[in-house]
Image (cartoon, rainbow, N blue to C red; front, top):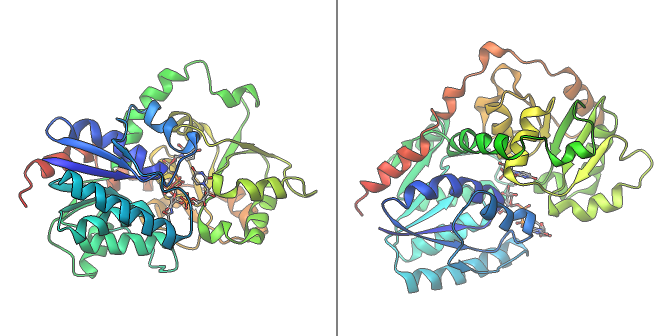
Length: 360
Ligand code: UD1
Ligand code: UDP
């Protein structure tokens, strides 16, 4: 088949990097990059480091309001699909690039394969929840990472073309962690700043619900400033401006080392070696779980409910004292850790086998 893969944001480059290699053994894949993420550290770095083939098209849509960004993508993707006439379109996850790709293909009656289907937070205020619901409802093959995702789809009356294949992010961690250990055999760049033996927490924040309101971000950073260990925080460009403003406030910034976003290999080692992760990222919650690092999720709900078992992931509202107490008091029950929730590291093989047998 001639398959068009639509990508746009950091987590999609990681997922595609692990799927693409196998997919190309049997199919012609063309990558379209919407340009949603465009900084070197948010995009090109991932293509280079993980040897993801270069996009044939870069639509350079860039940032904007949801309507502007999605509208531009829709128009540009439609033109590519009309020119290329693919037999299928692959989309990943729940970003605006995902939904624009799915809608453009759907209107042209091109079958859509959705990787990481069926996730739900049941919070329709999240742009991601809107994107994933729409995408799932127009997809032909729905590759779910967990049993919960399959059940979520069933509740919405979607059962045809649904497969529980396991999580491609687990495949990615298994594959890229080995590469990371080879690449950083003498230590991570950050170890030139902190001592090799320093214990540290790792934090990332980028969700609209935590970043659209500077008070919430201030509360989070104040909490980090009061913790008992250094906090290493790769800064998502969405909050770069806020951090510049907040970092000079007197009760802020003690303890926190702000760094540029890092590549995936470095990130995996940072997660594996830290004491705890504090995040609102979907991907990071799971990577922490895969690597048995306790995670404090700075949100009121999670799509990845499996990670909550045994206290490996704890939801935490945005309130300074609560964050500090939660981080300091997390305890895990090792017996409850069950990686099988996310498959056996062969999600990519399963996905490609199903695609190989697909007849429209
Ligand atoms: C997007 C996804 C989110 C995903 C995240 C992964 C949507 C609605 N959100 O959120 O689901 O978890 O990607 O990281 O699709 N910016 C830059 N340089 C870049 C990219 C972004 O400066 O390379 C800045 C711009 O000011 C932009 C802001 O970050 O307005 C937000 O970027 P955007 O892609 O709209 O949303 P994310 O927060 O990255
Ligand atoms: N990530 C990374 N470098 C960073 C921050 C995150 O490689 O500086 C990885 C992270 O480990 C995860 C992925 O990027 O696998 C997606 O994370 P993000 O938080 O951007 O998106 P989400 O998963 O919430 O959609």
